[in-house]
Image (cartoon, rainbow, N blue to C red):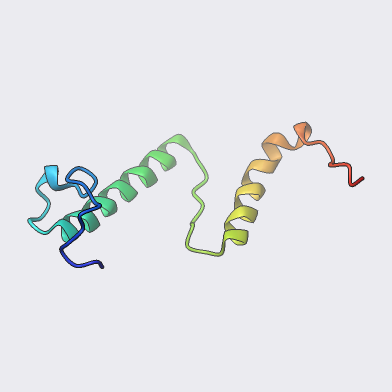
Length: 82
């Protein structure tokens, strides 16, 4: 990743307070994995649609709209092209 000199990454952002690892890089990666799983679990529990973000910006945008559009379609107004 960035080596062990991650000055911009603070103690809490790296999960160092959880004592996951003595290495800030390893701790950060483990902490991010835990956070990701917690968000996925919370989303599933809430019945939320999970949209992967490892695709192109356009693909993610399209997937978001595919998911949201049925709920907001009645509120959308055409944009006047003039």
